[in-house]
Length: 169
Image (cartoon, rainbow, N blue to C red; front, side):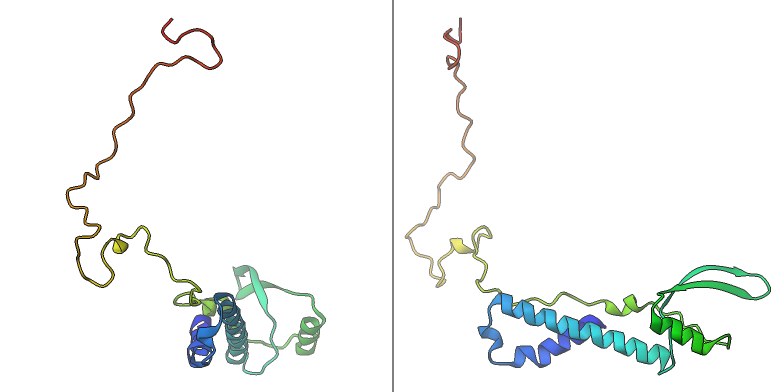
């Protein structure tokens, strides 16, 4: 969900701006990061609205639980003043526990990618061997050239630089 929102921001706002193609790769990555932050905040707020629908809530982690004469559950939460106040105001009245894992909504289909400042060079892909205009001329034509690996150089016994004795002595 976060990735979908980020991509919509980029596609419908940022990439539509005439200056997008004039931005450096670094500037584009900065804009992508900002769009990602807005998307993450939007997802957090949406989860809060949908899951809690305006009711006071505590973000808790579930702990031990047992099933004996009903369900008994231990939860842990931050000791913030806000959380303590909410719990004190609610008291011992019944409450609804919504089991939701917010991280599920922070996925994405693919990473957002900035346009490269410099295109990749076709050095090792073999595409640069042919003439660029499609004409096959005789210049640089290397048909019949042996491209097999070079043979190993012959081994010679030489005198050691440290030793004054000949190698075959």
